[in-house]
Image 1 (cartoon, rainbow, N blue to C red):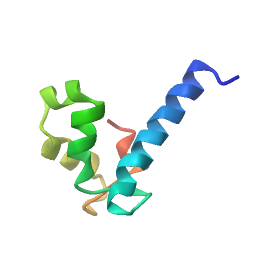
Image 2 (cartoon, rainbow, N blue to C red; image 1 turned 180 degrees about the vertical axis):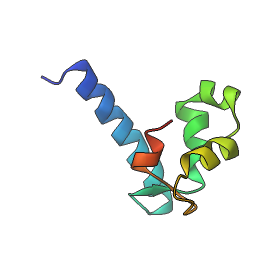
Image 3 (tube, rainbow, N blue to C red; image 1 turned 90 degrees about the vertical axis):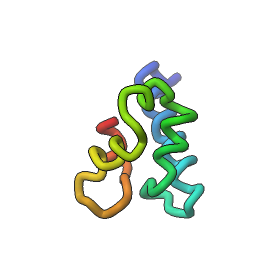
Image 4 (tube, rainbow, N blue to C red; image 1 turned 30 degrees about the vertical axis):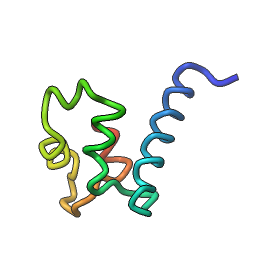
Length: 73
């Protein structure tokens, strides 16, 4: 039986992959971060808009947020 932490991590991975696949790239979020924040993290959108979050998360400046960058959220 998975622990609470394992369930939480699995949920994060599932949501990331679900949103990243909308543009066909399992490994990166492009314009999907705004939708993800609106549907999965609405409280985060109250702190900063999606563009601000994206600029902060896109550490390598490649125009996408990979899973490692996404975890910073």
